[in-house]
Length: 193
Image 1 (cartoon, rainbow, N blue to C red):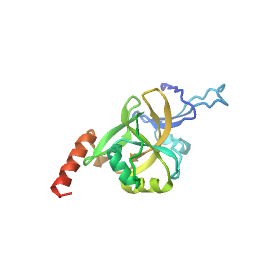
Image 2: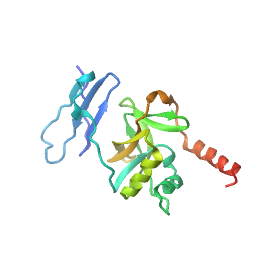
Image 3: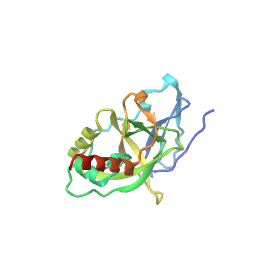
Image 4: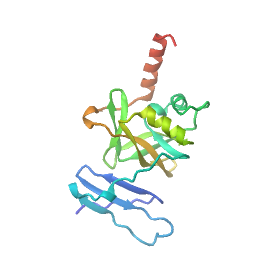
């Protein structure tokens, strides 16, 4: 019998795949229907019904985006978004994911439920900014919803870029923003910028 995991975070719809090839779905209760209990739906292997896949969300505005790599740097993010001022960032983390490396760049992939990835969130204010992010991330990443958790225990829905390319192109490793910024600065100095 699979282990049933219950979470208590309002308005959250969460879909994930476990390493043991069991997929599960649970809809957490809103205040309207909090008297009803929802038991996760389980399926094995190729039996996973289509409704267990995350729904497509078109680019939206005024939504938080979770960043875990080069875009954690406020100056880099401001340049990519086309903003004159550095954006406001808030530290947070997500569960059930891990970082792998694509060259020197981080790639977010599904991990075990207890794995966390630390990063920052930023409020994206227009569809134009979303488009700029999508261009920066290239087509080997896709937008996916996630729940971000803050140090004060609160949480929020956010969108993030997850790896959608060939997993064989990735290697184990971690991303260090300070190292990446130092390498970038060294290159700029050598190029006379």
